[in-house]
Image (cartoon, rainbow, N blue to C red):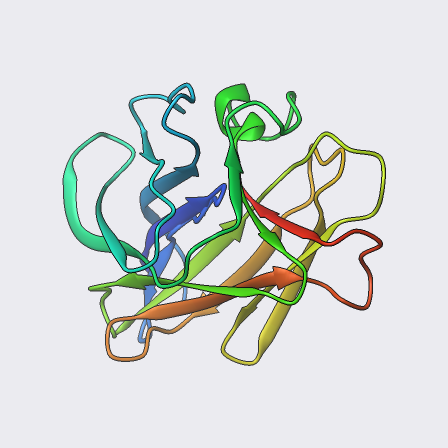
Length: 192
């Protein structure tokens, strides 16, 4: 039986779902939820890690969905261009305070984030989400290793960038977030 340990939601919803490499079935063990927001934003709830400081070089120790501290950290390598606690779209897959908040990047900029102190013998499921209340096309592209996933942020209530069976390297999963230059008509990318 594969043991699926973590689902990390990075509305950035990173859903850490962890399973060991030697197992064949998958069992969810923990869920970790991260809400990228603004200091004046409402909390995603007791089961969410609300992160408001979008400065480069900051680490945040995470808690699981029961509120218990864990050894995993969220590291923000790059500064972002903006943030909001009210410019997203309500009615999405997560609580409204999460769906309404986001960090934003402008054209031709990439932000790198890392999830650190992970178990190297585990596989993880990660889910990224963002939404923006606008009317044009703003596609966010997320890259982990050689895998790419995208979502259209404008009016988004369901699309996610999803990565399955991600294996950490030296205890780290690194994700690059940027505007998809081939699909976007506006100069922004969003991660909630």
